[in-house]
Length: 232
Image 1: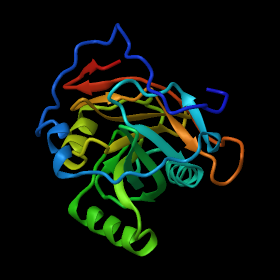
Image 2: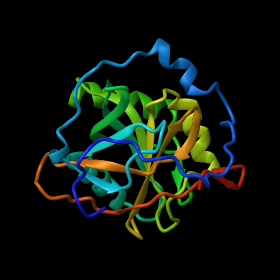
Image 3: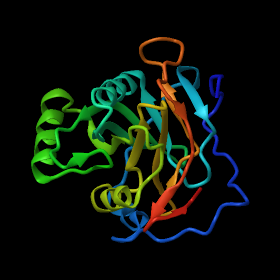
Image 4: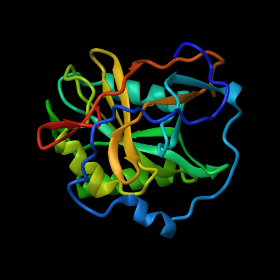
C-alpha cells in the first residue's frame, strides 16, 4: 500500500481460499489462548501507522512493526547474502476492542551454527543467548516471534520453517517474518484459527520518521507442508 491506513478493520475473508491443513505437530494454538490471557491496551493511533498491502483477514492478528525493528532485520539480513540468517522478534501482544495486536519493537539477531544457504534454525545455545540479550537490552519486551532470511530464494514458509514455528512459537499471536534480502521482498506468517498461514499484510509504526521506510515489498505467498503449497 502507498497510503497510511485509516482504521484497524479486518478485511473480508477471501472466497477462493484453499482448504487448510492442520499443522504437522502440536495442538492448535487457539486451545492455549485461555491459559495465556493478553492485557488490554490501545494500539498506536492510525495516523502513526502505515499499512503495507492489505488489512488483516478474519482471525488474523494485527501486526505492527516499528521502524527500528525493520532497520535491525534489514541490517542483519544484508550482512550475509550466502546463508540464511535469523533472530527473535521482541515486542508486546495485547487486545483492543476484540482484536489481537502484535507490536514488534525490536529484532534480535541470533548467532546459530545451524544455518546454511537453504536452512536456519535455533539450538539450545542460540535460545540461551537470545534470552540473555533480551534481558540485557530489552527487559520490558517479550519474544513474540522470529524472523529469518531466504537469500535469493523468494518468500515462503518451507516445511522446515513450519516445524520451527510449530515447535517453538505456539501461541496464537506468535508470528514469523521471512525476508529475501536479494530480491527485496518480505512476508509475515502466523496462526489463523489454529493453522499456519501467510498474513495479508502488516502495519509500519512511524516511530522514527513520518514517512514509511519499509526496506522490502510486502508479499503474501504460501506455507509449504511436505513440499506442497497451502494457504496461497
